[in-house]
Image (tube, rainbow over the protein chains, first blue to last red):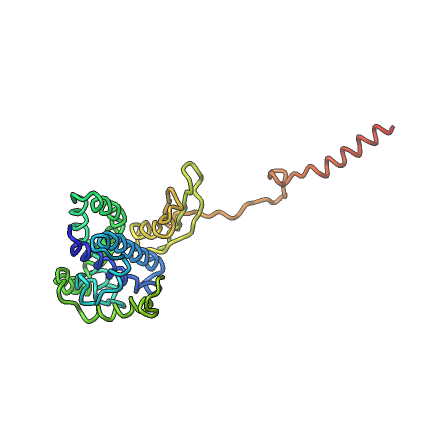
Length: 188
Length: 93
């Protein structure tokens, strides 16, 4: 697996983690707030693990890959870039689309010839199993809602678009890297 | 719906009440309980029970104050003191 493919994966996880974390404190109910924040945190943790592998191949660090590239250098899918707060139906639609696609990707990575990649994928998959359970139970609850169906139809085509980014990614990047850029040369 | 969550800290230990979660159904309740009470390795198992399934009993008739029915209701200190006094009085005679 080349570093570019690893970056796609890591960028997806980082950005979807950030977007999901925007629900922290404002989710539809307190229990969901905890659950969804925990999923967001897991995704960012996965991003870090993948960035570390990519960083070794590229001779850099995970932090530099995560925060020091320009927005147009990110390889994430358009699906994860959108700011969907306060639309919970669309958020769950994205969550379900993302987790379904991610399941396939992780399954393939578990079969990788590179034992490090296969091992990491297996580890991550054990956490993802709970994300999928969460996505599935919400899917079943919302599947008959027209708002949810519309969101699914609108978001689905964005999944495989990686070359063109939305302006929302640049806005998120500003937020995400603000602290890191505030003190040039600082090591945190 | 409110679900009461009980958790077991170590295998073999009794389950203790951990708290409650609000969820639309059993499936959500399980997921939420897992997140709130099981995610940091603090539990080996959870029981998730709809609140209605818990029967609370809080009326205990004790009209005649039969405190000798209770482990803590039968203080020996006073009785021992009196017995000692009697024994000493008997010895003195």
